[in-house]
Image (cartoon, rainbow, N blue to C red; front, side):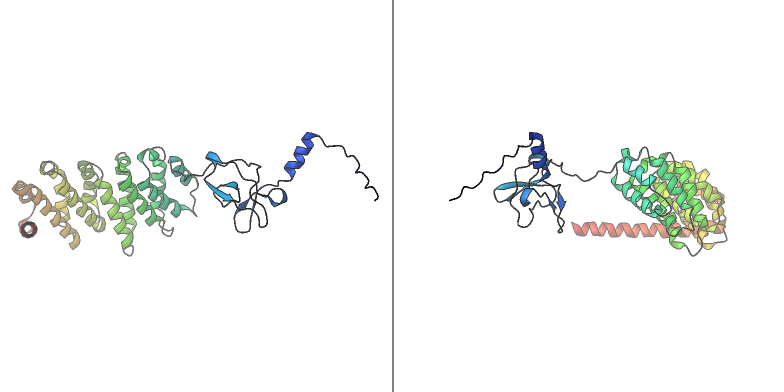
Length: 339
């Protein structure tokens, strides 16, 4: 038999070059067509990342472990199980936590095309964020909201701003101690600008004012509202009168008695308004004064009202008393029935 010639001697490459060649056999991770992240290695092998704290789970392929990094670590079709070459570990992702920075980012990214979405996001944050997150950006948020109330021509911006303001009052009431007068003034202005066809917007303003005055001290709320009662036109006057009656119901009788000299002149003047709805609101307000103070209110009412006005107020007082008595009897009956 003929001899097989010996293979020629080839010098071995340096250790560093051999190491580089070894590394070049492992291309970087790639995404498979099914959306999974793959780590192809030499000859189709699938080198795993390091295990431990960096991995979120452990998947077994054959006898070699593969650590999942949020995706399924599957080897390419026809490839072997995981090789021993480690890949860097990736820290697990966590859900982002909203802070004051996120509110600032909303403000920074706000523009004409994103104004409504920004106001809606701020309305959600008013309920979800703690007061500490609002301390720095609240002033800028309030400026944005109040400016948006004046954008009557922008479709839906004014209504979205009212919704945002309602949520801010409900979720972050303490911040309005320093801004109640400014916010109320802008709301009154918005109410005046509503046309007869914009009843939905006017009703939103009404609710917002009522919520705002409900989170500040009652005496301070009266000081905000009484000038409106004394000087406004019929539409706003009717709304102000109704909110005034609500405020008087909140106050202890002695506080109501101490504020009568400030409250009654505007209410009595509204009693003579040409608009019947305003006159009716004034009557209801005077009835609430009597229901709070009882006979202590009579000297003030007799002094300021005409005999015909006093007679009308007396009729409504009697009706209110009967309704309360009937309501109390029904409540007593329900209570006895429950026993």
